Length: 168
Image (tube, rainbow, N blue to C red; front, side):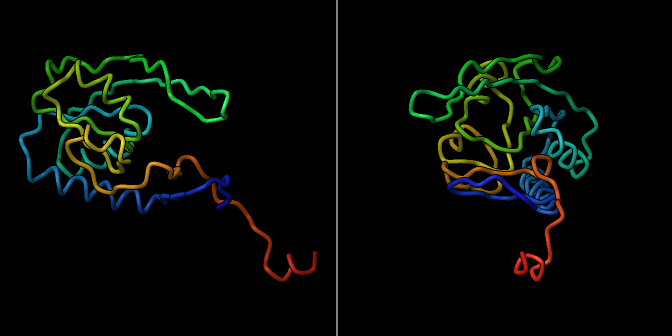
C-alpha cells in the first residue's frame, strides 16, 4: 500500500475495521434495547452495517454531515462550518438509537448532532482525545496528531521487487 506521508499514521485494513466494528458491537450488545441505528455519512456507513448485522438491527437511518476544511496562514488544517446536509429520520430525541461513526476526532460532528438528538448513544470505532469525551462508547483510542487511513482511503498498488530496486 502506498500511503501519503505524515507525522503519525494509522493504517486500518478491511480486516482491522471488521474486527473492531465487531468489538464495538460486543460492547453495545451488553447495553441492549436499541430501536435502530443512525449511520453518520460517509465514514459511519460500513461500521454501522457491521454493527447492525451483529446486533440484528434492521432499522437504519443516515445523517449526512459536511465539515469544510480550511488552511490558515500557518498551514494548519482546521475544520469549520460543520453543516447537517440531511438530518436523521424521525427518531425524536434519540432515545434508544445508536449513532455510529468510524472516528471521533475533534468532536465537531457530534457537537452539531447532540443538541438534535440528546438522548442518542454515540458510538465510534476510533476516538481521539479531543472528541473522546463526547462519545458514549468507542473501541480504540489514537493520539490527536495521528492521521487514520481507512480502507476506503487507500489502494493496493504494485511495488517493484527488491532486486529490481537495487538495480535501478
